[in-house]
Image (tube, rainbow, N blue to C red; front, side, top):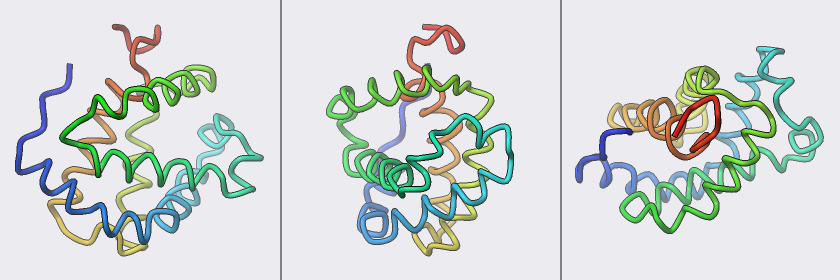
Length: 145
């Protein structure tokens, strides 16, 4: 189980919500450009959803919802379960999440949505630990209970 986030980290996360609201789709669009340099990872995604722009919009909405509700994660449970089901169906595994973090962090700087060092810390921590361990693969056979 992931270590709970500190009150300070939760405040930092919540503080990114306005920038994520304004720049989230630009951030996730840039992230996917970087992520899809790896053809193996690109093959895990629904090409039509990416081409239509739905995939970046969905991820931006999920990240924003997390930032807005980091102090009340139970609100996100239904959406998290849908994400988990989709990731299991697409065969996304915990070892894929560091690549997402590596694509997301520089994209955040490029999109000007995450310019400060504390924000980088939460992005990496959330993407690599919390999301991979609890939100995206909760209960799947690859991640365990």
